[in-house]
Structures are given as structure tokens and as C-alpha cells.
Amino acid sequence: MSITDNHTDEEIRKIYNFRNIAVVGMSRDPAKPAHLVPKYMMERGYNIIPVNPIASEILGRRTYAYVSDIKSQIDIIDVFRPSKDVYPVVEDSIKKLGITVIWLQEGIHNVEAEKIALDNKIDVVFNRCIMAEHMRLFNDI
Image (cartoon, rainbow, N blue to C red; front, side, top):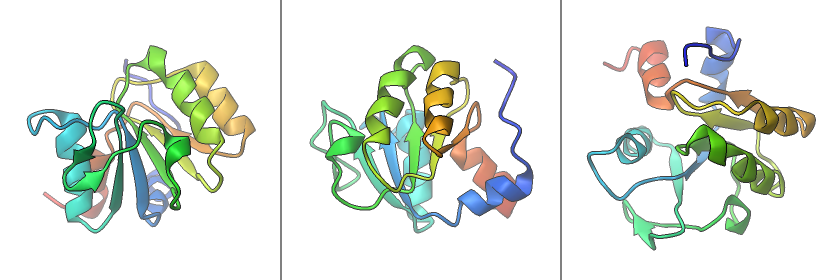
């Protein structure tokens, strides 16, 4: 998949002002991007909240089965799930008030999920890695 959303660099840069990120599909396996990427963000001061129904804790953080189970403030939902699994994630995320952005990692896009997010005033970034974009925009290489 080569298409991405049409956000400008400035719009993407502003998203990084939000600090609370729920990571859906976060992995316990240190070799997987779904572990490396949130770890990178955590090391840069972001509050990472793992969403993984089969783990109780990842990187010392309590995990949740669903975004809607999280009691604390969430600004960004970062999704590491196949495109076909995104719709129920977005549907569940809409129940949680205050979400500003749903970020779909590289290779992930779901048009129906994007539509319901946008209909609920939630911005959608897709087919971009939140870590790669951070490194590119903030020269963190």
C-alpha cells in the first residue's frame, strides 16, 4: 500500500503535542515493531498505554483488552492490527471521549473505519509509522 493520508508535515508535527497514546496490538516481543515503536515513544516522554487482550503487562505498563476499558485520558490511538481488524478497534475507540487522532501504522488503512472516525470528529493518519515520522520531523536519528 503506497497511499497515505494527506496531512502536511506541520499537521503531523502538531499531533506529537498530544502525549497519551493507547497502542492497540502492542506486542511483548521486543523484536516486533509493535513493541519497538511504542518503546521508542515511551523513551521520548509519551505516556504509552498497551492494548492487548492476551498480555497483563508490557514494558512495565498494565495492558487493557479494549480502548474503552482505559479510564485515563487518551489522545492518540496507535493501531498495529491488520486493516481488516481496524473497524472494530475504531468503533470501540469512539466510546472513549477525548480521542483526537487514530494513527494507523504502515501498511494499514480501512476506509470504513476512517469514515466513522472522521464522522466522530477524530482525525485519521494512515499508512505511516509514528516512530519513523517522529524521527523524520524531529531529526531524531
